[in-house]
Length: 248
Image 1 (cartoon, helix red, strand yellow):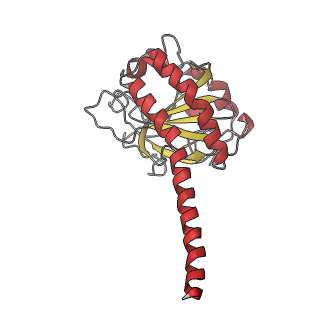
Image 2 (cartoon, one colour; image 1 turned 30 degrees about the vertical axis):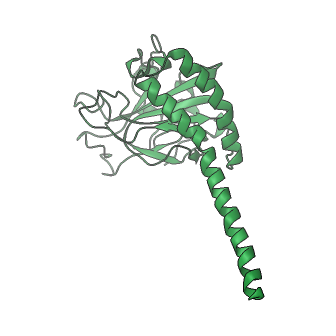
Image 3 (cartoon, helix red, strand yellow; image 1 turned 120 degrees about the horizontal axis):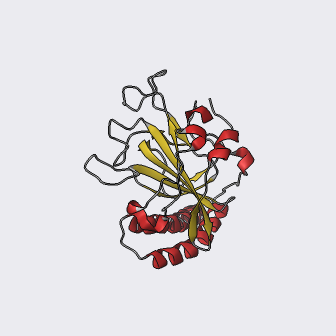
């Protein structure tokens, strides 16, 4: 009986320790879940601008710690990739990226924000079926940077007035900013996931209030917001998109 006891006790200690470790890692993800909750409240107009700003100020340092503690590796802008697999800068809408318009935009206005602080990147999709005309396959949306998935929406239907449709927010610890990928067909990451440049995060789609309408060509909507004392200032990614690596 003593032999069995001495064998079982170390095994029990091993599995207990690992169970506690798993719980600890899961619990640290709460900071990302909390950010997602704040983002959803901002989106739906259920939190004041100042309360939301203060909450984001509180959460960003914790998300940085989460990224480091869970093996995240920072990549500089030299390692960024074009966010659509098989496409390059010639797919960006508007002459010289002229579709970008930050006037009137405030992140804290949520779904009712003004402006268009984004670049739209169009795929070859004459049939509007979210498939590339040349391959008849979905087009992968790639994370442009490294970072942490801090907010997303995986559900959307045509009766919704949600403008971004199925979207993803990724916080890049290196640049201290947020990347926003909208109008996706489906989302393949989860809140708390750590990504690196070139990781697949979604597939291009037509979700969103205006994006699903026939007048709108199929595209990815990508925005970058620089964080400064809780303010989220839009920055035009056009020059970066001209110089990043292309994934075939």
